[in-house]
Image (cartoon, rainbow, N blue to C red; front, side, top):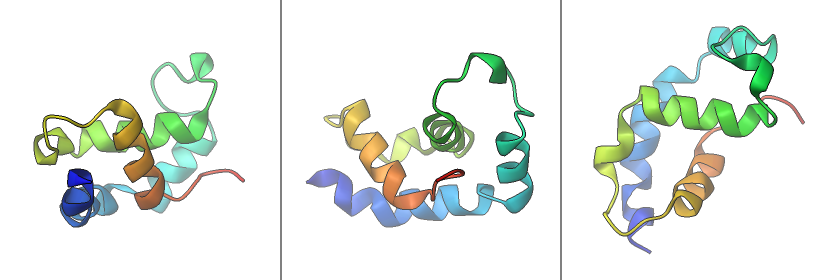
Length: 80
């Protein structure tokens, strides 16, 4: 899979943004439109992805499902 080659670069962009302070804010619902969120972990990892502007690292043929799988490997869940 082509996305696997992008995993180290994706991790390097996202990891610095995954801070304890940001995790606490998300777990407490202190982020935009938090009331509408049904899955906090999905929202958190995708917010990190967009904040990292990591979309330019990915091959053109990957889907959102591929990206989410990669993000689940990079970003630990906020809640169990």
